[in-house]
Length: 367
Image 1 (cartoon, rainbow, N blue to C red):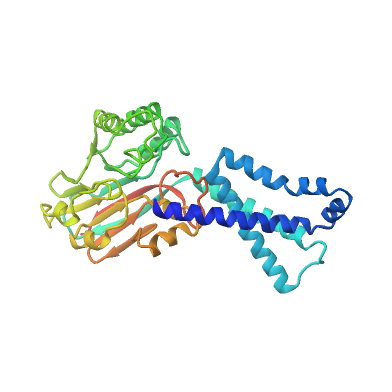
Image 2 (image 1 turned 180 degrees about the vertical axis):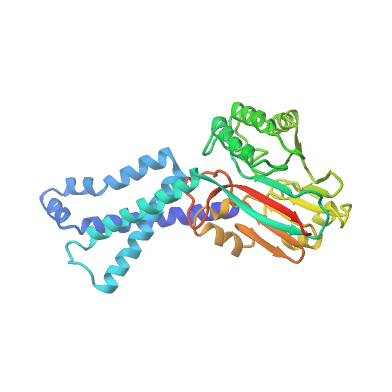
């Protein structure tokens, strides 16, 4: 949350400076100079039209307007810098071409990001183990659905049809299942549909930082959410472990951001047999050093949304807020996977490699 606030402050400062720069550039257009010479008042009105448009969009959607405007400002500055360095273009048309190139690039780049945000793909990982697990195990991971963000209950049901065709042995939900403004109707309908999916070992869920109402202005409580999940046979794991047959254990941690006294990774995994294949669910990828010491075989997380947009992912890792932004890596005996989220939170664009995904992890016993 602190990182997000910091980014917002920098974003607002960038926009103020950038808008001033763009207005100055507009005043340099030959046609604008002529207009100002003829009628100064009209010239200023035309110059301020972009500011008025930005103000309207800020009123409708602050975050995404900031995202779009910041991209326009940064790309415009880069184009102007390159053009000035290479001395490209006639003085009277320099700014005009900078504007056209900037707008074309931003439309393509942010259009690509918007597509990635709403288009959900299936990402597959293939793991093997020396441990005895019986038959091969297929885990399907859903993370950060933030129901109501990019889809409501009907949209979630369509994604569940995709999941059903994957024939999961177990489904895990690694937090932020609902959002701060998810409606109770969407939550209930989505959970009922989720509970109807057929699996061999069931559906397991850990809380994320938004699940308990980070902003606390939705029309249902955490108790309502927990009750609905349990009624639909979805197992909530709060610093708990559950055996899936004789050979596999699944453990779920409480959310680090919203829980003051959650169990340490070592305390949670203490009773898990070293001979069992162990799966640890932790919404935020922030405790890798301690989790790998437990010798858990697999740790699954979400929270980062794959970085969402550059430079959010890099900022998260450099600040130490996240140990990993996206993908898979192995530390000693533990494999860590961070899901890029099936949806989003606030920002409607995913760029810099971030995607919306359903994760499939196939685990095979070595022969």
